[in-house]
Image (cartoon, rainbow, N blue to C red; front, side):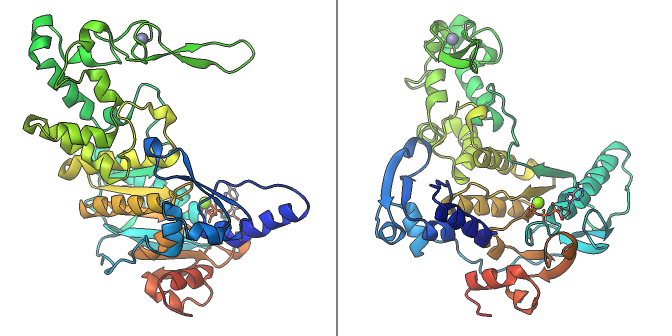
Length: 424
Ligand SMILES: Nc1ncnc2c1ncn2[C@@H]1O[C@H](COP(=O)(O)OP(=O)(O)OP(=O)(O)O)[C@@H](O)[C@H]1O
Ligand SMILES: [Mg+2]
Ligand SMILES: [Zn+2]
């Protein structure tokens, strides 16, 4: 995959074109003539040009996180132990698309990574066969308690299956990180319990921007109004009535330690943690917001509309919402198709620790990935191929990453073993 894109880019360049790529891939960065590194961090803490120049110069740059990863000062560690498994789901005689009548065990309560070259059959197996079968099973169990279909294995505890794509939490401008994670309910209750609210008769609903009562009616609590343009796409402007604050003046006068509800929505996750942490009565709020920080979203504003979040950010918010549920969450199988697309090494590290947190809570994760750092962290690998199309669709390898050395036909083996520091 990587070499293919590099060859393509070099060819485009040779025939006189200028190529600009937004990319995190190490090999592509090495091949670039000129690199522009943005940051230093994400969101509010980014937005600066940290570095401009070539790859060798970038490695000397002290402030660049990219440079730290390239030099190995910061790195994604190889796990010291691979999780062992007993529970699994077995798919038998899968023939969809190019799959060659294969039978595969997918371990549960682990991080399982499905690898293989493009066209080898990964999506066909996982999204085309495994997901619908498991979904049918859990729905049937929910419906009449009966086991459905021809799935085999040991998976009686599994209650839900979830396919997490790049748009997992919806694109509504009315939802945002703090509502998605359900911490806003507790924040609204807190505001409704203040003396100023009691005097004015404000209930929890008055602090919602989604229902009338306390919100600004001019923008219906969005803080922005949409202006339709005749020959262009619509534009959004700050609401003149509330100046983007979303609420009416009476509600904004209710303050908790000098902050009104709009100030809270304007805080980043990190700022909100620092703020609420001081008050013992806010423990529930802190516990709900913390997972957002844990998955590396400390820089996101609590009230930032979901429609503006990147695919990777939205995925991590979804994971954070399950981490926040803790023991209460149903036993789930999460399936991802290339979740690291568009993520920096630094974000990949956060994503991997979110995976670990979920597995520790009893969930299971199956990921289709090309990213070497994710593959090297797998508890179990399923490698498909050996090649794409007709020449693919076979199981080339099943096992722990270290055992790839025995998989002579696997295109995955060489680069993963290199990452693991095992020569071939
Ligand atoms: N709906 C379809 N109808 C017919 N053939 C298909 C269909 N979807 C995929 N294929 C073929 O099946 C083979 C496996 O495709 P699949 O999408 O499973 O590969 P993949 O391993 O997920 O690849 P990638 O890494 O590019 O996502 C390919 O040769 C593909 O062209
Ligand atoms: Mg695919
Ligand atoms: Zn308004």
